[in-house]
Length: 281
Image (cartoon, rainbow, N blue to C red; front, side):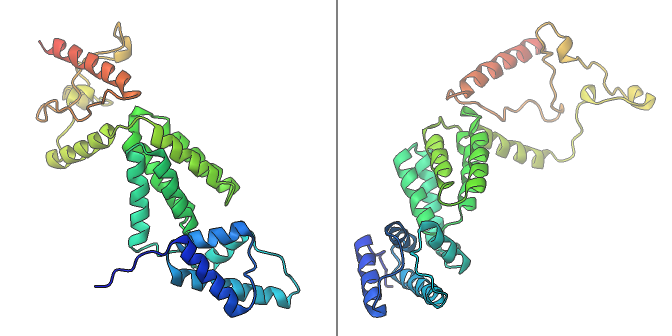
């Protein structure tokens, strides 16, 4: 098996110089756009040459119209995306880079997170895909340790949609910095998985009657709502009722960590658990 290694930036620059020699003219790119083209190639010389062909084809069309302006960064991105020349979004590189970004954020490595974000954007990845994954990260890996993370992710998403590329990329970078430096907790994610497993296991077991409404006489006769305690009427707003079915018991699905905002949640959960234990004695 032959393993092909990515080309370095200087090697990609050499390819551009050779292409310019072949066409006997410089590529109609600003310096920023030239760097962007090399970044989008992401070590793939074939990809870069395909890009050169598209750029020169566009230049020939512009020459016929009498236009000779250089393409800037945004124009290059628009051209390449319109020709569907994004890097392989179903191949290894796509998944390798998003995995690198995700794991860098989980490891609270802000600088690495920014680097992999830049690699993905320069490689032509759809920013909306990146933002969707970052929003998922906010709920799965940051979670309730910093509950504002999801709101910040949605805000960054909206900012990008309003500004577009390249201006909107800063909002994505700021989100990466926030997520990397935020406290992390996957306890909500693990609690949801545990709840899903429990629901699948217990099937169609009915809720306890005391937490069911009784809109009819028949339901009242069957004991619906009997013994229900309205928490807001309790002296401290807590009734200590068990809301699980008797056959299920009281499994603990959510275990908050002593991290970030979850420290406060953990204190409340511990207090309510003590109250329930006292009420069952």
